[in-house]
Length: 385
Image 1 (cartoon, rainbow, N blue to C red):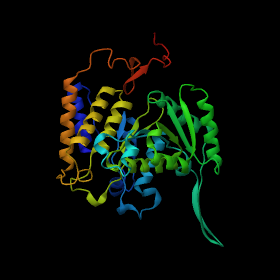
Image 2 (spheres, rainbow, N blue to C red):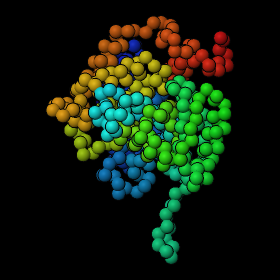
Image 3 (spheres, rainbow, N blue to C red):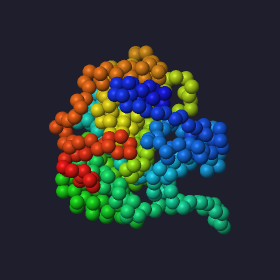
Image 4 (cartoon, rainbow, N blue to C red):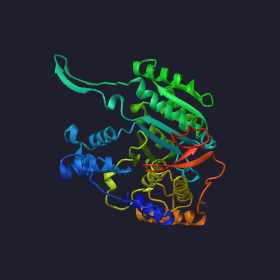
């Protein structure tokens, strides 16, 4: 997280944008300090912020805590309080990562660039649950519930995002067994009928996972429910060969703060040694620049810097090629910050009309910075053509 903040400070120096950081306890650290993974002060500060940049939580130290005091419970509560229903997890295999992937070269020749759109506030993780003892033993249950409105908003977002990419949506479900999945499939088909310019494919989730490994290039945007999306995200990490390089953004309705966090866990076995890979956190900061603040050029500069480091180094131990001496967390962060500084200084954005020829009409000021308005977007009330 320190390296992500370092990169954001370089962006601030290069652009004049001012970021105010408020560091607060969360997860296991908050359990130790306050007996609650999401203390009231942390929750209040998150609700009042423009965005939440979140570190990894959890670890074996807290596995024996009651369910409500476990670090993961704080994460579920924070998502619910902020209303972040859409989890965006890009899975992209840059040139520097191909040696890490377990997939064969012939599978990777066409590239891997998939955006997983996971529903985040419904399904098994939020349904009624419990356990009880009866004459047969202990019976436990978790309830999988979705409404058509919950499904429609996440599916519609997936189609909107696909319009900015390669115009393909795949939906993963288990509609041959689950009633909720039949709802997902029906709503997806209804939404797809409004997007003639976007292709759609419907997969049973087991076949979808198989095809994701056999031919990841066939996918552009994949939308699915909470539990399937959780599992698919880790499969995506396996495809690129490292959990340490994947970011995520959790978004709600416009005007509410999003949560930006790396996909990886807290890796307690290497905590405090200064050798963890900071790229997942840095890329999460790039997603924050893009989705919370509308700073597309700056987000791209950070992502380009990551690509450069992944290809040429320096590398932490999880990524270093055989025979190459790995470096520590801070060294990678320093390299990334230097490249971002150089890239932003080398091509300052013009006062207007940037970036060219990408369909952006103008940049609209909002509660959380500026966001691009594209040529095919509806104009907001009160804005003239």
